[in-house]
Length: 178
Image (cartoon, rainbow, N blue to C red; front, side, top):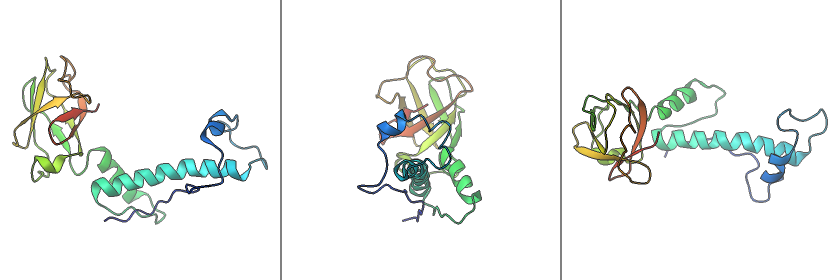
């Protein structure tokens, strides 16, 4: 399992932090603390807010890409891996070469099979505007339905020519995320 060493600050049970409701209602978050006035539970809340997002992003990179995410004081590797994650992993970008309701595309590097794509977001550039229910055939594995996140067939114009969309394979169909 990949190593991820971005740790949540003040995230343990009983941590000395103000509640989320208190934080949201506070007047100081937009401008920051006045000099000498921050209480430790307020300061800890601010640190926790930032550290929890760093830990979540680090864990996502480690889980999806299977790489170590190490706090060594540099940003280049983490940034490169975050970009790869946002792009859907290693080369998970498909330029559609199919028809309006029958998208076709190749991932490079090629996945071993369709099952290896479960949960991996694929960025797809549609060649045509769809006119109704649609499918996608990735790397010749066969046409698979594209649905909404609720499982409904796509409506006309859900995909537009030259539009870029995230699709995620759930083991049965590709769900349109964006």
